[in-house]
Image 1 (cartoon, helix red, strand yellow):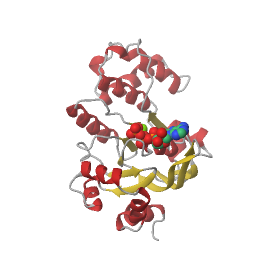
Image 2 (image 1 turned 60 degrees about the vertical axis):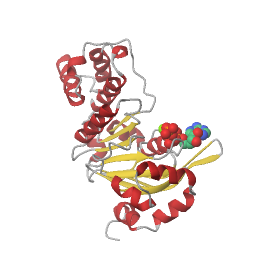
Image 3 (image 1 turned 45 degrees about the horizontal axis):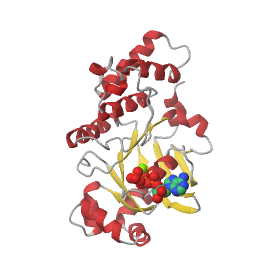
Image 4 (image 1 turned 180 degrees about the vertical axis):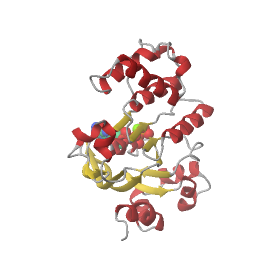
Length: 279
Ligand SMILES: Nc1ncnc2c1ncn2[C@@H]1O[C@H](COP(=O)(O)OP(=O)(O)OP(=O)(O)O)[C@@H](O)[C@H]1O
Ligand SMILES: [Mg+2]
């Protein structure tokens, strides 16, 4: 049947990583990451520029596999990538759109590629309208993509990924370069899009819009240094607020932070107990 059944059949939706590491240009840019996300979760991936967020995102969605193991609902993502990838939506940091097409044309083109080959015009146009409605762009459907605002363009990219109803949705800095009100709206949109049968992972530098987020994952120098509720991070680092956490990360030793996390109850609750329920 559709992509949805191929990735979630049998087991409940989950995404887990064990001992995830990435080496590039002779350097370790991601080390020893263990994580587990559950159905219905909106996850924010945080950390200073160059800390490895995009690298982790690509390793978690199989577009740039790392060492270690990633499982999607129990199945080995790297081994079964061809079968599982239709259940994965991914909007990269530097997404590419056909900017001379209208929103309608761009999405129709994408729908032809993504829907079954025998899908008729009516089904295609229905699918396009449905995703436009989901991202709030119905009124802009006749506008050329290049004439949209940055935020609207990002929403077209999101709409394209929604065409195949992926249970996993990855967005790399979808809110960058947008005004603060729009950033908040985008986060609210991702919250809405994350129904009970989806996991959404978003990298972001925007710290003001994390209220909607279930789980914050923070990296520093390629290491996992925090996992838990977003508003728990300042306390964990003994900082006043999230910007102060970033300053602490910039000055501190990432390996030491990572060890402290691994010894914490946050790590037990949000990583170990999830990876091995009933331990
Ligand atoms: N192919 C590569 N070869 C060498 N180094 C790389 C490669 N890809 C990434 N890196 C390095 O790995 C580190 C992490 O990069 P990554 O793009 O994951 O960071 P990021 O947290 O997403 O940063 P930003 O917030 O700026 O997007 C950076 O120092 C980057 O230069
Ligand atoms: Mg990045």
